[in-house]
Image 1 (cartoon, rainbow, N blue to C red):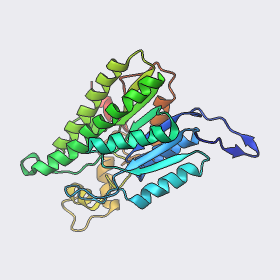
Image 2 (tube, rainbow, N blue to C red):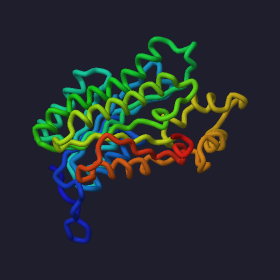
Image 3 (tube, rainbow, N blue to C red):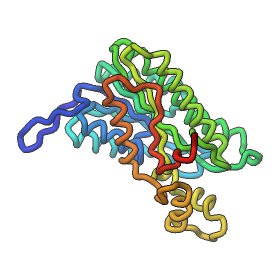
Image 4 (tube, rainbow, N blue to C red):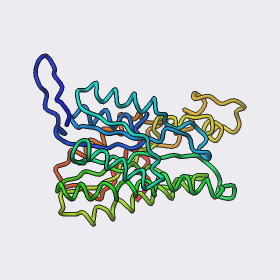
Length: 288
C-alpha cells in the first residue's frame, strides 16, 4: 500500500489513503495527470499503456519510457506504484494487468478507464481497420477493463469507476463517426454498469472533456485536418479554429483540469453514479 507524504516532518492525510487505483493510457497527457492526481491524494496507483503504435492511428502512442516516467512521478509523491505494458484491445492482457494489480496490492478500489485513440476520416474513406482499431480500443477495451475490475470491487464491497469519454459522446463530430460512436457507446455502457452495481458500494461515472491539449489533439494529422488551407500548419494556426468551436473561446483544457473532475467522482461518498460530468468549455449550453 502507499506511504503518506511527509511535509515539514508531518504526515499528511489524503482523501484516497489506503485505496488502490488503476489508470489506463497512463503514459502521458490525461492518463499521467489522473495518475498523479490520485497519488497526491494518497492512493496506490498502478498504471498501464500500450507502449507501441497502432497502424491506423496517425500519431505516436505512449511509450514504455513515458510510462516509466509516470510511475516515477507517482512514486515521487510517496505512494507505491506498478507500471505494466498492455494493449487493451486484448482481453487477456487486460485480465493479466488487473490480476497483477490485485496480486501485488491485494485489492482494486478505483479504475480510471482513460485509454483511447482518435483520428479524423470521412465515412466513405474509412477502412475496416480504421473502424476496428478505434472501436476495439475506445469501447471494447473499456469494456474489458470494467469487466476485469468488477469481481474485485464486488469482493471488497467498494469501487469507483470513471471512464473518460468526450464531447463527441454528446454531440457528433464530422469525419469522426467511429470516434463519436465509441464515446457514445462508453457513456451508455457505463450507465448500464452503474445500474447493475447500484447498492453494492460501487459507483460508475463518465467524464466527458472537450478538446484536451495532448498528442491526441495536437498532432500533424489534426493540424492538416483543421487547417486544410495552410500548406504547413503549426499549433498556433490551429488555436483560433479550435477556440471557435466552443462558447468560451478557449482552444482546449489542460489534462490537469480533467483530473479535477476525475477526483470529484472518485472521492464522492457514494451518492453519484451513472452520470456524465462534462468539462466542456460551455458546449453543452446549446444542447438539451
